[in-house]
Length: 208
Image 1: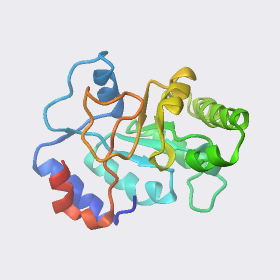
Image 2: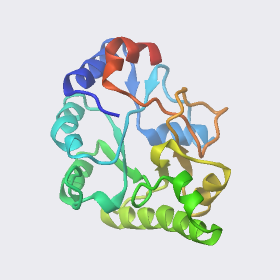
Image 3: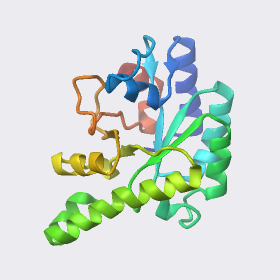
Image 4: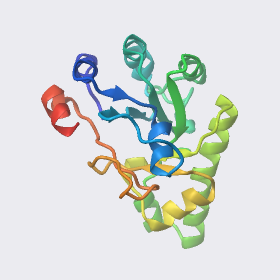
């Protein structure tokens, strides 16, 4: 969610000191889909949602220092637009490091539960299709790379949304349900741990 730079670096150092391997998200998804070998023992994936400016100012130097892969889940409406968000140029700079993978987070981060209550079924279906497809199309055009992984906004998902995401070409999607990822989980609702600053190193170590 939000962590200080010092806490994030302390967590990265803990992973390094305890011989964990930070692997690309794609490596995990390929394995869970039965299309790749098992990740190394003690593997961890790092993701960040929303493309806030601090990913560029604070996270990038540490990613370079520790030479770790990170997946960013981006909603394009904010980029080069919202005051808190990175620019397309900054994101392209991150991509050029070879350490950042850009993936989808819908087009403008809707609350699907709220939208479903206030829209007609047809309007809601159109909204969901637009959010899932438009984000994918824009990001693929901007980065020239496949966008087929999705983080659910606010961690909200259901069976219908999972099917819609799969229908438009996503092969894996992620919630914020606090569990380890495994083959027993649904591929379109894989769990992640949402980190807060209070987790520190001890809480982080306990999760890992």
